[in-house]
Image 1 (cartoon, rainbow, N blue to C red):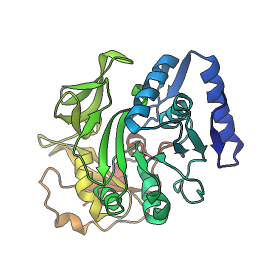
Image 2 (image 1 turned 90 degrees about the horizontal axis):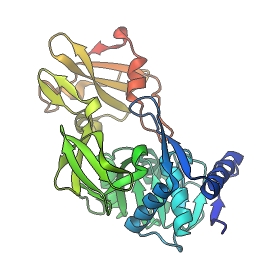
Image 3 (image 1 turned 120 degrees about the vertical axis):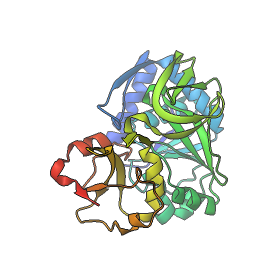
Image 4 (image 1 turned 90 degrees about the vertical axis):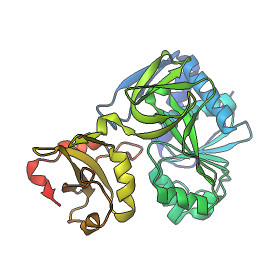
Length: 337
């Protein structure tokens, strides 16, 4: 049976990548998928086709997709998100419209779309420049990064149906979903058949189809039950400043409304604090940091240093490769706030 794939972009590479996946789906028993490398060097993971089938079926049921659904694929086919959408389209036999990934995936879209998976950058551009198109999509799934409160509010103001996904290459896409619009839930909820526990404040995923003994992640969470958690940040990003544990993602959420340029928070070795909080900005000129003096931050949370870099290194899905960016900086690049 031929898949119901429709190509919206003329680039031969898009058709070649899709054709290669289809050939593998029809002929291979295993699939190798490379991680994005957000938190370190990219890794290669190998899965059985049966595991892809199981993961695809879980998502189809959780998202309510069927053979009448029109879905847009605007993620890189090489990413786990793009690859698994191809797999779901073959399992559920829905209409899949494929386009070359851009920051504005809805800009030239003339098709009726029921479901789309995006990264936060694509959602942001769609909210500000293609809102009328976005409003016509029944279900919007966001993965590959956290949403800001401003983005969530914009989705709610537009009365969009939006879910945030939690997953990784190791889990073949999402294992939990969180509704953020039109009403926001504070926690992620497990897909059927998946449960969670906690070890050293980090999430452990119990996924019988993939990890019967559990998969321990580096994601710091607040566990509400074996099916629900609130995501706090990454343990490998945590900063120990003067004996206080600071989660950069939490601090970034506090700071984000006050800065219009991309930035992230990291820890820098410090003789007094052990580590001090520092901000890294994607800019060539010094940002206005005066707002930091007026914010209600603890002494440990308050940024002590900053650095600027002209362009952040990012993954295919536009997540900042924090470690790679920090490695580009030297001692002279850090300036006092």
